[in-house]
Amino acid sequence: MKAFCLGGAGRICREAILDLVEFSKFQRITVADANEEEGRKVVAWLDDPRVDFAKVEVRDHAPTVGLMRGYDVVMDGTTIALNGLSTACIAEAGCHGINLNGFGEEDASHPVFLERGKTCVPGFGMTPGATQMMAMRAANQLDSVETVRVSHGAYRPIAFSASITETTTYEYDPKLPGRVVYEDGKFVQVPPFARPRDIELPPPYGTSPEYIIPHAETKTLARNLARKGVRLIEVRGTWPQKNMQLIRALYDWGFMRNDKIQVNGREFGIMEAIAAHLMQSPEGRETELYGYALHVEVVGKRDGEAYRHTLWHTHPASDGSRPGWEKLRAYTRNVGIPLSIGAQMLAGGLVKKPGVITPEEAFDPEAVIGELRRRQILVHEKIERL
Image 1 (cartoon, one colour):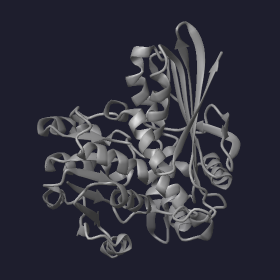
Image 2 (image 1 turned 180 degrees about the vertical axis):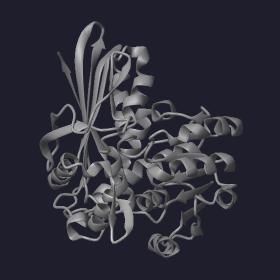
Image 3 (image 1 turned 45 degrees about the vertical axis):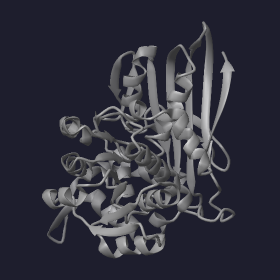
Image 4 (image 1 turned 60 degrees about the horizontal axis):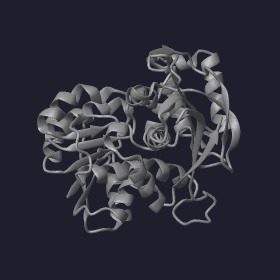
């Protein structure tokens, strides 16, 4: 089997590729990126005879399709802005595909995946991705589901990469139509910083307010839990406290609108300038606490009794006590490893449904959670009768 790892020079995707090297049966693993210098550094870092490099620019559709042909799966680590283009390439090349974001740009390629008999699973990292698996694990134990509340804490610098900066700007765009909650059969749009709720995350993260964010889980869980009568789905998130302070100030002062400004005769969006500054500053590229924390609460009924399932996850500490998980890698490995697990399941023939499908349709939650456990990422569950 062969895996084509698009955006493979990125901090997150290279961790997914490392997982392929350590756990998969692929005979060829290609690090594919527009940045040849960084891509070849990843090849040297991995130091495995199965790993090679391909220079690729997904905006050049035909050459990208040509490079992808013959691979079993494309593991797509590109940014939100490129996901529509990259998915179109994957579909035409006749490969399975999986990516991290899942904001809907992939849907246009659904007919091509169907025609080719291939599968694309958008949005499979920690969140979205592992969060859906945790929610479905709980829902599968219930006869009916009343509410699902998905929360996460992503403890990483605000601008350690261009894609992370883009994600931050996207999620708090005041005009974004996709920031919704699901209530009684309808998707209700809400503004940034809506519906604050204190979420208790495991140590060392603690309790902090979290707000509604525009994530795929709201729509994918609504689709897959409709048969269980789900009435409310909310997805929240937070970043380190300083990050949230900055985003709140930028929002309150109108910067998140990304208005066009002129400086010395040059026009650009104000958020482009702020993002460029953050990517070049220690404040933007460093943080005090690194890692990831998921929290999923599902309330429903079984045998006529009401229950609350609370699930959370833990991983090796970022303090250097566990080699390979130091500082930022405690965040990037959490995101990259589920992407690798999904790619392996796709290439291994474990997903039977073609087209662009949700993680819930594609994967068995118990199988994914078991694979995470093999990588020292542990899902915990508490069940309470209400």
